[in-house]
Length: 414
Image (cartoon, rainbow, N blue to C red; front, side):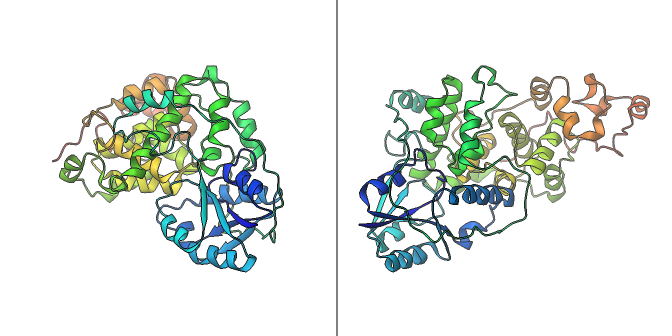
């Protein structure tokens, strides 16, 4: 029997469920990738993230023959299967809200498999609150990694297209993903030390099962549970992606439409050093630590009062590890319209910044104008006297902006 395997967010050989199943059930397997312009380039596209994906695909194509299709996903897959005489399409379920799997599987015979998540939507009852979900999630028996596929793979070894300019990125291949996991020191996992696994998980260069069994930290595994929690919530209730979960609250908010403030936020020129450092790191690297993500999104929505959707879209256009569902869920949580029981949750940005970056090293790395500011003023440089500003070489309001808003302020307008 001839079959087609469709690579999407699973650009690996090791522990690739549907690829292993295809190699076991089919005499010949044709691996494919589809570039559908409507999916590849849209309002949520990050050129950096796309470049990472293309480099990962190049690495994978050196290990297995892949045919690249270009055009409408359903039309191109159906045509390719007819041309090679394939009976089934194998793929891993990834719950992508932009792909019409129902229509595709009306046109061709599909076999889809659990692979992307540890606990899939529907395995547990629908939960809108994380804590009870997590208690049930921990009790679910977790699957073990499955090894490598073995079979006859056929394809024209299509050349991977150069769709975007080059970016500075981590090495995008399966071995590097596994090495990143092996080098992760769980004992140091904290507010300031993370695994850096997210772009590899997002692209599927490493399986979620390998990650789960490769760590023992309960806090780290809890983060994997958040991933499953958000996917079950927003997959079973797609309407939440746009409306938010707390609809009454979301629809009553009168968000401000201030492009000047929004641009100051995107450019890292708000006058709040910890916010500006985070946004400049995001713009330069496509990465931003979870704690800083929380602060910059809180500042945009709860301090400036700008619609969370604008911030979420901008993040997706920049993030190396951007995931539409997870990004949407996180922004809704911060804005008070998502899966949070405390819709009026407040943060003290200055205090949080000092907890994260007590010596100001992170700020000085990204906000270089403040490199000579003393530690006691690094989070609030506007409190320096004019003479001290002159001495350290940064005049607030000239070399670095005054805060565009009170960082301890709170926007309420219902």
